[in-house]
Structures are given as C-alpha cells and as structure tokens.
Image (cartoon, rainbow, N blue to C red; front, side, top):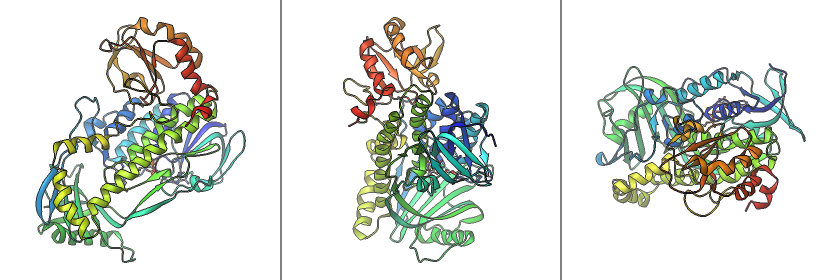
Length: 505
Ligand SMILES: Cc1cc2nc3c(=O)[nH]c(=O)nc-3n(C[C@H](O)[C@H](O)[C@H](O)COP(=O)(O)OP(=O)(O)OC[C@H]3O[C@@H](n4cnc5c(N)ncnc54)[C@H](O)[C@@H]3O)c2cc1C
C-alpha cells in the first residue's frame, strides 16, 4: 500500500465510487479507492443507464464504446389478467444529445475502471474500511488486512449497508416499501418477444420479464413480488418459484428455463441518510439513499452525487474554496434523492397495488393513463434526470432561463481557435464560459483566473443571441449568467469565500 498521504480516500468501487474517483483524479486530486470485495462484481443489478448518467460518463471521458454495446431502451407491454392493455414506450427527447441505454452495470463499472486506470489510479481490492477516526486535519482509516491510510477526506461510497455511514454516526431512517421480491437472471426460451419488456398485473402480485443482452440471445431478468413467509430461499428455489409464477400470473405455459446467472431475494426499502457529511466524512450513492429499483434510478443518482461532490471537493483540496462549499453538496443532492425516493415509492406502490381498491385503480385507470403519449414523454423525462435543477439550493438563483442551478443543455460550441467541440466535451474537471461571441467574455477573464485559475474553458455558441455569458459548473449546471465582471466577482465569492454558510437558506 502506498504510505503517502492522499487528499481523498474513496471507500467502495461501485459506480458511485468509480465516477467520483475518475472526476477527482481528472481534477488533479490525489485519490485512493479501496473496496472490500476481492474483485469487480461479475453480475449486474442495474441494466439501464438513463440519459443523465450517460451524460456524466461522457463528461468523465468514460463512455467509451458503451453506446455501441448498448441496446436502445425497449417499451414495456403491460398485461392485466393476461390481456395486453398498454405498451409503455420510452419517448426520447429529441432536443437532447444523450439518450438512455440498456447496458449492464458491470459494463458501466468496467468503463469507469478503465478510465480511472488511464488517470493513473487502480482500485485496491480486498481492502475494506473497518474503522475510522477523524480530527481537524484529516481522517485515519483502518483497512482490512491491518493497513492504515490517512487522507484529508473520506467518502463512503460503500453501498446500502455502508459501514462508513455507521462509523460516522449518520442515521439512515426509512421504511420498507415491498416485503419480498424475487429476482433471477435466466437463460430461457418461450417467455415473450424480445422487442419489449413485459409486466403482468395479477391479483396476487406482479411479474416482470426484461430481455437482457448477452451472447446467447436468450437472457431474461424475471422479477416478482411474493408474500414473505419468513423462509430463506436458495437460488434454485427462487428460479423454481418464478417458473411457477409464469403460468400463474402471465398464463405462459411453454417457457423453458435453462440456467440461472444470478438470483436474489430482496425487500425494497426507502431510506435517506440524515446528513451527507459528518466532519471530514461524506457519503454518496446507495450509502446515502436507497429506494425501489423500479425506474432504474439508483446508479444514475449515485453517479450524479459523485459529479456534484467531485468539483467541490477538488476546489477545497486545492485551497480555492472553504470546506463550507461541501455543505452545498448535501443541500443540492439530498432533495434530489428525496424526490427520487418519493417517485419510485409512489410508482412501486401503484404497480404492486396492495388491496382491491389499489388493484382496481391500477388495472382500470393507471394502465390506461400510461398509454397517453404525453404521460410517456413526462415519464421518460423524469426518469432521465435531465430536468434536475438546483435552482432552489444555496447556489441557485432567479431570472431568465437557464437560471443558476439549472442544467445547461449540451450543444455544439467553438473553441477560441475555431475548433468545433461540444459543451459536454469541454466540461468535466473544467468549467465552461459560454458566450455568443468571444469579445463578450473578455472582461470576465481576469475574475475567472483569480477564482478558478486554469480551470475555465472559453467557448462560443453562435446560436446564443444574448449579450451575456453563461458560467457553467463542471457538472453542467449554471453558476452565473451576466456580462458584468463585478457581479461575477460577487457570485464567485459565494463559492470561494466563507459566504456560503451565510447565504444558504
Ligand atoms: C434489482 C435491481 C435493479 C436495479 N436496476 C437499476 C437500473 O436499471 N438503473 C439504475 O440506475 N440503478 C439500478 N439499481 C440500483 C443500482 O444497482 C445501485 O443504486 C448502484 O449499484 C449503487 O451504486 P453504489 O456505487 O452507490 O453502490 P454499490 O454498487 O453497492 O457499490 C458499493 C461498493 O462498496 C464496496 N464496499 C462495501 N463495504 C465496504 C467497505 N467497508 N469498505 C470498502 N468497500 C466496501 C462493495 O464491495 C461495492 O463494490 C438496481 C438495483 C437492484 C437491486
């Protein structure tokens, strides 16, 4: 183990920890990433990467060949009492440069590890956090195997059962949402057509079948809720029970399950960490929030946490901002997670529909409502997380759109030498100053150099017809819009001075 003191230790090399480590390393932060497991996970919980997650990966330069490897999201055929009622289609927003993709979590993690290795950092497998002690200057972390590391900051990206969270004394309140779900990824024939996912809504519960990509071309994810009788089920019992549910809930009699790749029995909880920070310890991803997997929001939300935290931590580590800036991380991301928890809980309860009234509403109203194109557009937009805004947070603001805190949509832009690129391509570790023409940005450069030295890329978008410029944060959200250097100075002072604590609502 490298005995040198690090700026940041990241505990956990899932999608959140890997995205965070990539963003920190790209910003020049000395980062170590440790994981309790012996090596990367081979099975995959998530199998959809929504548009926002794909955009973050693009900014991290970690998208690589994922677009080519992925399949476009397929619609869900919804059946009630065996009858096909609606196909819930994904309705991509054509104004956006990124779209969701069906791709395995394992593939996403692999691309992030590759990018991290390019940045000179390898995951230290087999090194779980076991104890931690923090003082004014940093955190000392005891790892399994007896190693000890010292860093200025520790980020717990160690998943739903986060030990970092409990060692830091952060509560994780919440409630169970669904008692018991069975899941099996199986090679099987005769389930349904592979052009769509399918959901069967039955008096006793739901059954879902999602086609997954693999070489054999017959991999399916089967999921169903069942009553919890307290008995532990092993993998073969999970598969057997799901095989029984195919005729019971879907009327499918000719299915043949060949083998199982992964099985799981889980209870769906909704939990949100009471805080995302305790002194020099921060939380991100499933360590900070868990919710129903319906809608595929967990990995995306964790990757979003990582990107929001990374630029703030990088400024603090470089001595360009006080550590009060880190409090804006929880102030922006905790409400975003609370919103995901609310939406996924409502959707899951509506679909699982416990009780005759809820079932009647689902089978007669909800399924038909979901057939409306406007509803499908809205559902896709919400799931994409592209509409996420921090405008009500401590770095947000009012005025014309995009407002401070809003996401700035990716667009083609020009560098000062005329090179064509995209806004996303210029962000990442760096910030972007976008204007309609280069001269409009000239008076702002000295202020930017003072507060964010060497970090701002100047780009022009000839289609931007306004006299003012946009200062875009590394995570793609607007920090400031205007033309006046004094106003910019005031705005930047809110992040690079101690004024944040005073201005936070
Ligand atoms: C059935 C199912 C389907 C899902 N589908 C989707 C989907 O389609 N889209 C989506 O966005 N999300 C989905 N999710 C959610 C998604 O899988 C999680 O939200 C995501 O894995 C969270 O990433 P993470 O990095 O925060 O945590 P994890 O992926 O749990 O990673 C935590 C890492 O920390 C390590 N670790 C644990 N303890 C320690 C320790 N003490 N010290 C060091 N390391 C430690 C672990 O070994 C692990 O590598 C799904 C979840 C489930 C259960």
